[in-house]
Image (cartoon, rainbow, N blue to C red):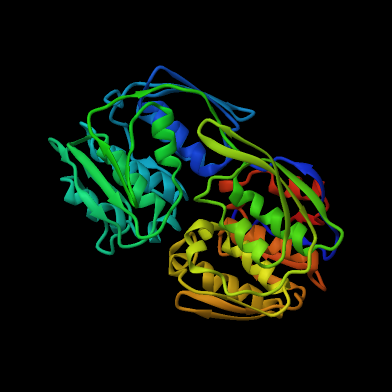
Length: 436
């Protein structure tokens, strides 16, 4: 993929029809990790064939796991058991995937061999001490750069020991990393989170037959158990659905159904926030598949209003804020976000990059240290730079539905990390988007 990929979107239009968006990235990652460590064969359907999830798949292949596919979202993982991974012949390159690097650092800290995790230029800027510091408390030996970033050099140690860790920030990746390390630790490993975060790791561990203990905001595992293979049907990713939820809400005359969307209660903040803004979102056909709740979402255009976003919803919508900022720009009145400093250390500084893009399109947006203040009303045409951040690129593509002129978005290659086929799918329901 060349970095010079540019989206060009013409203004206006409406979103209509019924689609199933890309598979959930978080669950796709974890299906490979746990399937690899399980005893038996795991069949995965709905796997997200994006670069991030494929980075995880290729890393486990490099450690001797036999994996067939992906073929139309179907993957077969022949598990090697908890202690069956082999030392890779080279560094494991996880590309742009922070999830791969942070979760795998926990798994690899307990192996009988040494490994090095590397990533692309964007990933080498992201903070890793949030996982390496608590792993060190468990006895892991991991070297980072002086600034606490990757590459991560993970040395084999005699044994990890369980800890009881209070997370300083709400982060599913840190929680998951420590629970996965806890599988290899002596005794119990407990993690306390300051606010609820996505619980895909806990749900999937239980799906693979590994007990996860719960005590209020604490989650724990006992070391020394085993995982048993199972079948996983990956739901459509609510983070990918979010662009269409916003697009159909802001574009007059829209009526769009999103099928088989993951409705995990630790991830539904985007729906709650949009409904507070006045969005018309109908949830139907609710069911549970593989421990994860899924449903169909019908969204119709609505007049949105600006709100003060409740801070308790922030961790439940942390990846969806670029899309929500576009909704805020189209809403009547002022939208205020606080308590979201985590957005500054994602694939880009999402607060600053979104603010810059909105301002370039004529929107009054003022970034703050932990959020943003957006005066809604109208969006003009213009050119914005996504800074290689897939969620920013897709959010500004949807903004064109309400824009007064064409919108060009530069540096869109990384859309393939999370949502391959986005342009074709969006065009099929009415977005006037092309790739240059």
